[in-house]
Image (cartoon, rainbow, N blue to C red; front, side):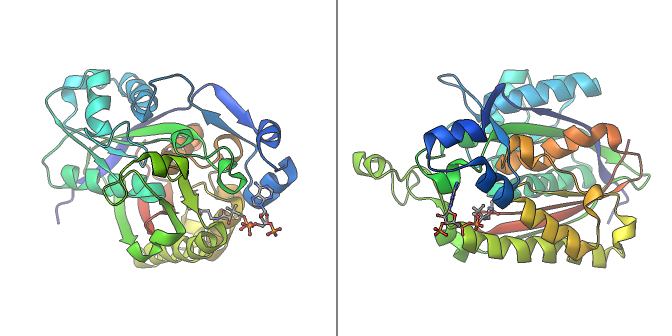
Length: 329
Ligand code: UT7
């Protein structure tokens, strides 16, 4: 293996202005702030309003900001990978649309679909293009407009999700900084527990599927919870073990933000105290592929060159994964 690593050289995020609070949800479904806060840790989430606005609009804002921050020119980008479960269209890919919106032309761009683990999957893919020497600048985006597939009459899901996007710029590094390891896993037998029932090739949209409200995200929360706690903790422990890391070596755990209780269980298994865990679930909820880059964006000013970060996620599929990142700036 070459000694070229893919280092994160910049991070930027975007969340829409509209704040959907627990108090507002109390007026929409039979729920209350106390239940949502104690069971999930969520206080509010952001919602993208406006007809004709999709995931690409969130992502393009994050990528534009990233280009400005890193002084990277659109023509210097070699590849853009977007993780999303809420693409603007079935085709073309959201990555294609983002490139067009920000003035990136004539490069490879594609979507990765791994639900809530999407960012770790996409980061792993982008890393390969840098490590192989094929690309010098790769953008990896995690973006979701979950409000497009959330049923705001279903209290078991509508309190959980929000909209947002985050993007990182990857560049080659030979000084030992960057994505040093990653693990991605899946188990398609998780289908019954977390999926969108219709709209794909198995059950294409019909009047009946719309009438039966089958185009929304469905989740068997307690069953997903059990898998998530075990898988996220296992994969985080595995990546630490195989890289010889203890809890003391880890500067930050960067977990997918689905439930504060799942995050706490993962931190406990890793022997990492909660003050080293990045958290923003209280203000954004579960933004699916965007949770991890939004955390990095929120905590960017607290990160130091050389910090060991463990990224960890679990989601629909089931999919799960982890990445070991040595922060490069
Ligand atoms: O990001 C992708 C992966 N997803 C996850 O990791 C999510 C995993 N699951 C979870 O985080 C949790 O299962 C939830 C937050 C979704 C639900 O929490 P829970 O502690 O598992 O609650 P529950 O589903 O077992 O429901 C407990 C009770 C039920 O009432 P009964 O049957 O005890 O009378 C629910 O009907 O809470 C009720 N309930 C609610 N009550 C008020 C469910 N949703 C709500 C609500 N407000 N929004």
